[in-house]
Length: 543
Image (cartoon, rainbow, N blue to C red):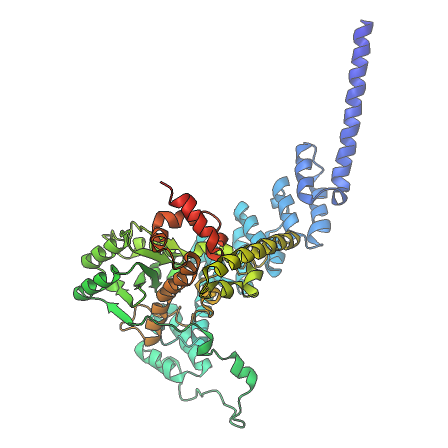
């Protein structure tokens, strides 16, 4: 009995000691967390202790130490962990987040707590972020009838952009198909001074009595000085700044059966073609209450060889065009080159025709977007002109191999330096923008600038691609998008493979080889010819 009582005393002392330690830990967690751990970890540990302080103390602590110090992300995380969302008004959390542009935190918080979504949409609309508000209304499946003013503001903002970019006349029918936009559209045209277009719209929809066109005057122009400042000249788009190359035999528009037969014969004789597609831009159908994107229907498919660019009119898609495109897409002899063409394919399958089978399979395809990571890793090397040095036509093969090894050493050094710099830099989650420096997608225009020396002009990207006939600028833009893909391939790959081994060139055009090389290090492929030759001889050409 004495022994058992002694053991019981030891157990009680141990329990008292543990409880004292728990109290000390709880004291540290509730008072001194900023000096030791982050608020998120503090909240999780506090929840695991199962002895939470009163909610009034916690809410006061969050207001005084997090919200007032503008630590909104930490405050939202703590509120989520400790289930304190109903202790705060929706405006108390959402309003400062939207005001400071913390849209990523707003979305994360509203995804968890549905009762703040209405306040989120209201605050976004006050901030002028109506496009983002419309997108979130669709994602959260809110009732669009409760947010008609948000939809209207977004539509009016789109009309302002069209008028500012000089595309009001081009998309006039699409705008006026929205009944609630006709009067605001005419008012915006009059305010801009485009009385002719405003009168044309008013006459077409019997709204002439709603406006007094006689009192409307064009904005006064300063005729005192005819000189143009150098600053204004430098801000104007200049043609020579953009890539301007054309296929030697021009453009061939394909919209009949006879033209289909001619185009197929010429395309199948080429060893590679560039692929691209154009669509009607999405404006107001993206705000459809059902979430449908009807305006994203493809209207044009561009296929370019080295000699000629073919524009297939998808508005006249039929069985004959389906068979021609299927023969091309399933051919193993012709290399197909694209940039982000997977997205195009999904839209082509979805929106061209329910009976279309040509877009189901794409064999022997090379995706140029995959080389972006290589360009981004070696950004400093590009600034020093490494690409230009490698893509030049070298007369000596030995000099080419020596230069490639020198470049490889330079790139490895730059990779190590850039990796160290990236570790020091913090990720900016506020902007969320994708650009060349932040590791986002380059875009075809930037890729052309890096490889061909000049970027692509995107002036006609947002235009009415359903109009027939197309404008000359539209034809040139569409043809150049596809033809530039072939030029990029010819600039990179022959400089790598060299001209001494034709059999190796043929092997490199095979889709299986392309996939194997793309899955590895593209810096060795694009920049170091000797490495690719040894790689192909040792790995790909083995039995």
